[in-house]
Image (tube, rainbow, N blue to C red; front, side, top):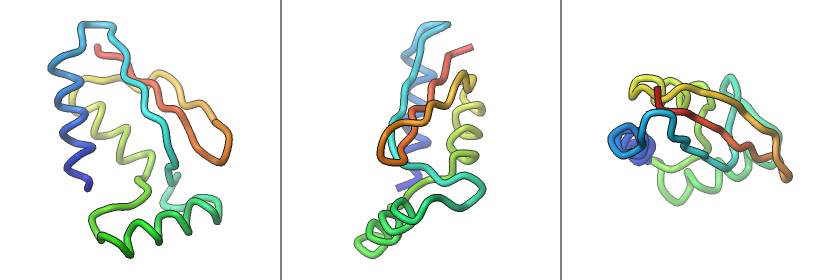
Length: 89
């Protein structure tokens, strides 16, 4: 659920030292869309629980920034996944 993303960002902000890094890995949508395999994965997740799903990259970055975590780098990974790197300000 989205609340898990928010909770992760809150905890990272609370427990990381200044300059500490948070790394996330997975499938993300950009601008609300993604490659077909990620969209099918999103559909599969949502069919099991409407609160689940592939998150929009922009929403994840916004949630991190609200907690003082700066988006440092997004790295394309195999199988249409991404690593997102955030640093505590």
